[in-house]
Image (cartoon, rainbow, N blue to C red; front, side):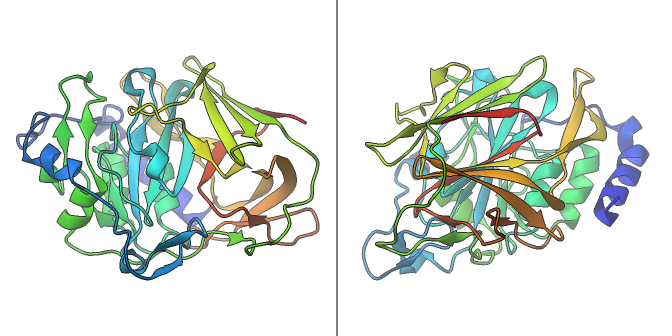
Amino acid sequence: MPRMGRSLVALVVAVAVLTAGAAGCSKKKKDKPQGSADTTAASTTTTVDTGPKVPSPLTGLPMPEALAKRGLLIVKIDNSPQARPQLGLAEADVVFEHLVEGGQTRFAALYHSTDAAEVGPVRSARSTDMNLATSFNRPLFAYSGANAAFQVLLRRAVFVDVGLKALPDAYTRRPDRRPTSDLFTSTGALYAGARFPGSAPVALWAFRAAGAPAVAGPPASEASIDFAGPAATKVRWLWDAGAGGWRREQDGSAHVDGTGKEVRASNVIVHFVNYKDSLIRDRTSAPVPEAQLVGEGSAWILVDGKVIRGRWNKSSLTQATVYVDESGKPVELRPGRTWVELAPPGSASLVG
């Protein structure tokens, strides 16, 4: 068992009797209703779109040079049925989807090259999120809360805390949403309120050069993932040749955000990963799973309407994950936004 895994188990055992599952978006004395000054500030958030451009390390696309040195921002976004439609997913450079209790999933949305005027619903952290954040060069991390065991890990993690407790004025409660899926923020408010700027992200993967041919590989028109459990989330990615990207469906319907914008990605990585019991239980006594991100395993890289059956390797929590094809060559992605599905082995299927 990796050292961090042993530390987590020891920590959880010590505090398990003091915790009662994951703490969601608990009520804070500084929470404001929609229409407050926070919401007004969020509505005016824009991305700098003038001046010199440089390649984004996360998308490979041109981004304003004025934004290139700012830190990576990670926002934990709810994906329960009552949380939909979300806001801000379409603006994220990269989104990781991982399993939580009962077969539901949550998103870790990464922002750097663009801003989002409203993001949410923001939800609580899990150890999977903290393990993800460790390799991203001290990112800003936004979340609604965490139980006692995970809160200790959060204090140890190498990131800038812009969560609800650390930065309450950056968040708003929307009266048209049900608790605990009513907490929203904006990238502008989080960047402006952070006590430290964080560090610019490193490239997560390689992108093919402009004018380079599309990848070689067998065709793939769709990929399906079943995050099994009592409240299983069922995901489908469909290749759209006309748009040159992948359309996302969830639980049988097109995945659209709160503005009606369809969620799409230039690349989808199905990253097969084992989950272990973190020994924490949620409020319904369901086990909280933790993705085992260090090691190696299989991966499907979906790009250009094709699938590359490859491998992933991550030598430590601080190292970036490397994706290679069957020959061991690093996979080059199409410039654009990427989704990473942290899928349990055997949960996914392909249609050619």
